[in-house]
Amino acid sequence: MILQSYTSSLVACNIYITSAASAALPSLLSRAQDHCRQLRLVQQQQCKDENKESNTAAAAVVHAYADIPYDRSSFHLAGRSDCVAEVAISLIQNALNEIELKNNNDNDASNKLEARHPFVGLVDHVSVMSITSQESGTTTPTTTAAAASSARQIGSQIDQSNYIKIHYYGMACPNNTPLATVRRKTSFFNSGGAHDNSSDNNENQQQQQYEKGECTIGAPLDFVENYNIRLTPNVDFGTAKTLTQVLRGRNIATKGMGVPGVEALTLPYIRHADHGGNVYEVACNLLEPKIGSVEQIEVELEKWIQQQKQQLLSKDDGDDMNDQYDRDYFIEKAYRVGTTEEQCLSLLKNADDDEYWMRYDQQVFSRFNAFLGYK
Image (cartoon, rainbow, N blue to C red; front, side, top):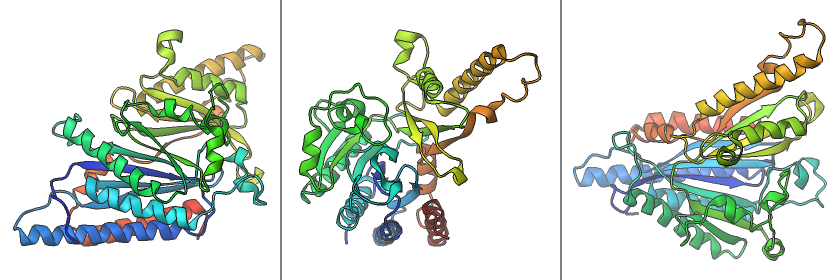
């Protein structure tokens, strides 16, 4: 195995799978980790042969996550663009070959379509993003081109399986079409637990022609972060939607509210009563996290909590309820999903530390099994 120039641009690649119940998922992760390990060893040998030093690891699985109520798993890769594309293609092909796309005819209630995270196919979404150096802090035509090229390479390879229909977005498509626009041409916003039924779905029938559904693959301009806010049973759907409106960036111009670059969607989070019961989540995509950050979302979230508190107090007699309506009354959990650019870059600097990678891979694998409910 001979790698391309080890000065390849760094990218991250997030792969979202519509399954959190398949027994094949841990094996997908372990094989991807082994693949990354082999690429790191090859890079080390090439650098040694050429008497050069490698500043970053060839490839790594930075994070793996599974959410059983959403029936969704994700694998988060980072490294050199050529190496990441190679690992991503292998992981996706294994998933397509080994995991079935379940539907409402299945008996397993955890896989009912209405309980899922919105999706268009088994391999629902693949996002390839540039990783910029901390010194420059900005993307360049070279780094963005590498991400776009990797996205198209991944799409081209898995398209040959004839399992899924590919939709490109962002810099991976000629018109740089945003992901949300592409998704509105699919069944995404009318699938799973999505409550946005305002989209045109004139391509919905095409999903039925492919055994494993469809897939959106693209390269956004910036490193996209994800942040979810899980509400408590005290918050009904109508109230949850008010939080979504407060956070949506597109509302800044029209409603005077929102966080720049944030897309937000209200989703049901369906669980057994023993695990907290059914609640709602506000799922956020941070398209420009350097402008519209998690910290800004938290600021607006606190304002929303205070507004809800005042509305409830105005209906109560006396002030004895004041302490009851704190953050915990409204919010069960607010948490990041996936990785950040800084996290990926920091991790990749451990280029030649084999012992470090052995420990790190084991930690990622153990956490993933815990998310899946395995001991």
